[in-house]
Amino acid sequence: MEKHTMIVTRKIQLLIDSEDPEVVKQAKGQLYQWQNICFRAANIIVSHQYVQEQVKDFFYLSEDIKLKLMDQKKDEKGMLQLSREGSAYQVLSRHFKGQVPMSMMTCLNHVLLSHFDKEKGAYWKGEQSLRNYKKNLPMPFNAAAITKFTKTENGRDFRFNFFKIPFRTYLGKDKSNKRLFLESIRTGDLKLLTSSLQLAKGKIFFLAAIKIDKEQHSLDPFIIAEVSLSIEHPVVVKIGKYQCVIGSKEEFLHRRLAIKAAISRLQKGSSFNRGGHGRKRKMRSLDDYWAMEKRYVEHKLHVYSKMLINFCLKHQAATILLVNQQAKEELTKEEPFLLQNWSYFSLKEKISYKAEKAGIQVIVE
Image (cartoon, rainbow, N blue to C red; front, side, top):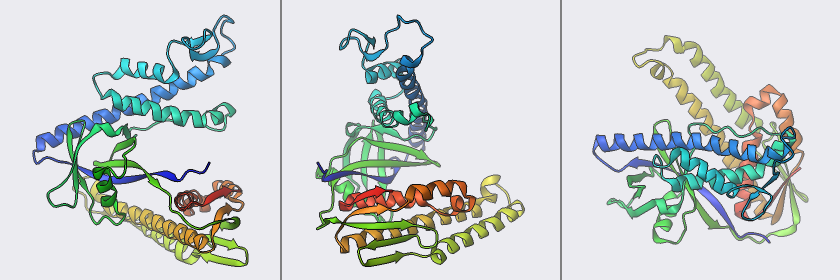
């Protein structure tokens, strides 16, 4: 049965809501401590799950070893004293209880088990290695962790407590209507699901997960849009006798190569830049250009994917078929030029997201 809702995530910058430097310092120290614990806990969880799943393949163990990965209370041949999720929680409790809110560990455990179950088939075939989580891992939490969700005095931002740490949002120009989402959460029109908090480059981000209704459009299930992604023309779509070419090599690749050339020149001259704060000052201009390239690529891919979805809606196409996409992605891995300068995967992800929101099915050939 087709789902009429989807989960979206909005990235919102947060500031610690206090004028006292000592309070801000202590709050940031607490958050970094929790993030470090989540990073360590995540790797412990996947390691234990992998070992539990692989026990039955340890053929060199005694035949008396029970091989069923079940709770003993549910199956007499089970080897676990608890469920898989419960056993992982007990391990985390022994390591970290009292150092971090255990509700955060519960959410982390649930999220990672979900990822593990989706990917374990590839692990057994040797097609994918076990995930290795890094120190900037987002900290998951449930909606109960947020209390006193109110508007600020200026009416533009919001403030709330996160495990008693006071926060306020920083929405800036708000081009993506994050304020509207937050207001809907405050009034109860939208329900906040299990979300995350992330620390990155000294900033704090709230990754708010919300369930929304998909857009309702009049689509014909018998109309298929054949879409080809290439470096010459980023998107070529054909629906029956109608064809549309979206973007060109000149406007995307040549502009990106121009930015890369500027980066190369700056790299050669960076050693002659004025110092004063070590690497940070010398590399400031380079960091600006790297950010410029990233923004340019993200903007173009958003524009291309949006134009594609609009074309499909105009012609009532209910399905998008990405033609020969898997072969192109394999070719990209082997070709250094394409790997560095084209973004097949990112464009495919943006098309899939916008298509799901519009109720269009995506098939990768």
